[in-house]
Structure formats: structure tokens, C-alpha cells
Length: 333
Image (cartoon, rainbow, N blue to C red):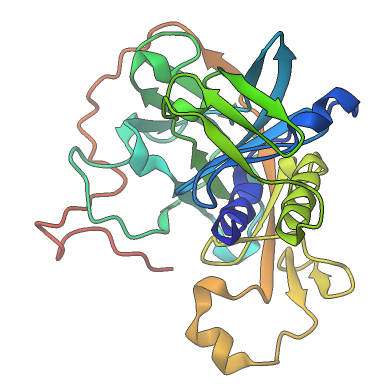
């Protein structure tokens, strides 16, 4: 379960919030975790759930239907874009691409033609993937060339067009790969007793009933899990912003008591900035002493019809392969 909690902390930087349902006493009888400490399903008394496993944590809502439970996972947007005005990079654009190696993705801007984010058969990935170019920008379009079940429209490809104020020059772009866990599923009960229940899930879980192994009473790990869940549900404001350091590692919103805002650099500086300087410099990626605030930008237009991905002749933004490490992408600022 502790591994599950660690996964949750990462999911909280990039996932969307669920509308919290009214407490309903009938949900209390389902409350608990089913499966094992490494994978399974946690049901909460407010009608929400957590599906967890290796590198997986998916929230959603559920409701009883007769002797069945129907589950509705919350699927994050295919693309998310966050923007920041970065006066330290002058007249240039910087983009951090997060998760784009997981899909057949493309980008075009008002200054550059369509090009793929990664080369065909890319491998040996070493994040962060940061692209920088001179000049300004006020719009770009992201494309996904995916499988039919990956796109809500059912089309083979789709595009998201973003328009923004030209003052924004520093971006975090996130691609959320479609997972089978985002599809609705159901479960039925073999038995429901005071001391536990056997439940069998449909579709992608095993055909064997799974037992409830954790209940709410006298369980500190369960209490910790509930606290994480409540924090997730309360993050409606944080859904529209991210905080990241210079290497694009994200962190929780800085507290006023611990940070001061520098208007000239548009950054938040820790009040303990000069403490443990040597240790922080040796691990720059996890250094949270200086943070930038990125605001979420919604797409102006999403093209639902089939989009033809043409060949522009431009190289991919990032070329990486285990066969040619000497010419593959290497991160540097």
C-alpha cells in the first residue's frame, strides 16, 4: 500500500478532479480495499474509488445497480498544456514534452510546419525532453495519430489547437496515453458479510473473486489513503496550475510561509534558498528552492473529424535511439 501512496503523489501533479458525491450510508458497506497491497481496488464511502497497480492509479465514481457495482473511471484529457511567462529566456520559446514518447504525436505552430515529436522506433528515453527555439509564438496545434479506441471521436487521428497570449514562452505539454483502466467496468458480489466480501470484476481483472483485505476501522494505512483521496478531490484550483523547477520536475503549490515571489523573474524562491546549497546543486532535478507557476490553457478547437498527417520533411523534435547514442537527444539548458 505504501507503494500505492507514492504513485498517488505523482498522479496528483497531472490528473483531473472528480466531483465529490454526497455521502450515502449505503456505500459504507462496500468501503475497503480489494485485492492485494500491490494491485486492486479501493472503494470509499462517498461513492468514489481508486484502481491501483504497478505504475497505475485511476480515480472514478461507482454506483450500485442491483447486485452489481458499476464503475466510471475518470479519464484525463488526451493533451494538457500549461504556460508560463519566463523572462529569463528572452526572445525564445521553450517546451517540455511529458509522456509524448508513449504515442504517435505531432506538433505544428504558427511559425513551423507539422513535425513529429519523436522519430519512428524511438527508444532509450531520458527525460526531460525540452525543445527550445528563438522567436515568439501565439498558437500551436497538437496531433495524435492513434488507435481507434484511443480517441473519443472514434477517428484514427485528431488535433487540438491552442491559442494564447504571446507573453507566454515557456510550456509544459503533457500527453496522457489511453489506458484500458479508463473504460467503465462492473463487478458483482459473491457474498457480502460483516467481516468481508468476495467480489469479482468484469473485463480486465482476473476471473477469480477477490477478497476485501483492508477496512476502515483501526487501520492507519487506510486513513492515510483516505486523506490522499480527500486531497485529490479538493484540488479543483490546482487542476489549472502546475509548479515546476528549471528542470521541469513538478512540486506542490508553494506555501506563502515558505516562499517569496520575485516579480522580476516571475518565480517563487524558497526562504531557505541558501541552506544546503551544495546538496541541492548535486541533485538539481529534485531541487524545489526555485519554482515557476504554469497556468493551464484550454484548446480553442478540437477537430473531431479524421485528420491527414502529412509529411513535412522536417526532422522530429527529438531523435533518440539506442543504436546511435552519439547523435541522440541529450537534455541540457
